[in-house]
Length: 242
Image 1 (tube, rainbow, N blue to C red):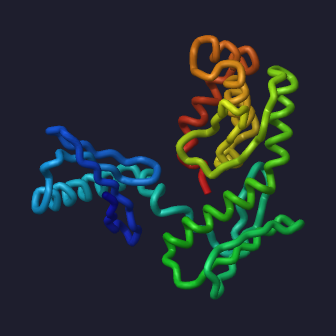
Image 2 (cartoon, rainbow, N blue to C red):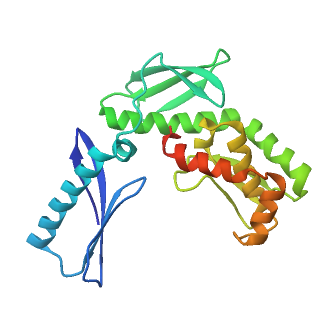
Image 3 (tube, helix red, strand yellow):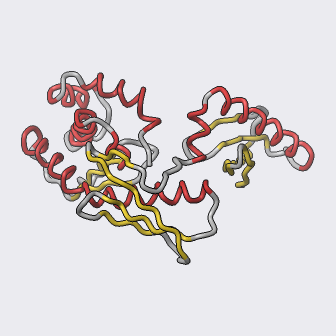
């Protein structure tokens, strides 16, 4: 079941799951607020628990504003400058009668964004984030792909089927059994050495498709200070997003 509640003008999605259990569990993920309930919770009992959940979320949002920022989205302003992969870009936002959003990057590093009219600020923020991720992923894909192949040729010498940038919030990268390397577009906000770490991490999976001691030995052999990069991501990763 899915629903939502509104906090500070923002719709916060709520996922409700019922299970054979006696306890109740709340959690806040990157995309929703989750609640797990006993199966017999219906009617007034369910309504009461949802009110408790909402109050709990509000307290969490006030104590940790970064949790609420996940659902509000980043508000981009017309003519604002943003730094992506160590390059400054100016956003030019245009609203018109259209069904979908689009974006393109001109040679002078201006990003032309076209949005449908009639959306809320939250809807605009989320939509702009999606189109920016898409257009910058395309723009910087060759740079990132070259970096992947550089480290592969230098240390791994494995076959790579493809390199992709995806707007992934659940992880920083993945390596499939088909030798596809997928990296989160959020890494475009990270320092180059942190990007390199994630690349090396995923390339190491071409040798070891697990996180065994053998896997970490491979990572350490290529980047001895990899733990510093992990700590940087743990500390700053929440802020890396479109």
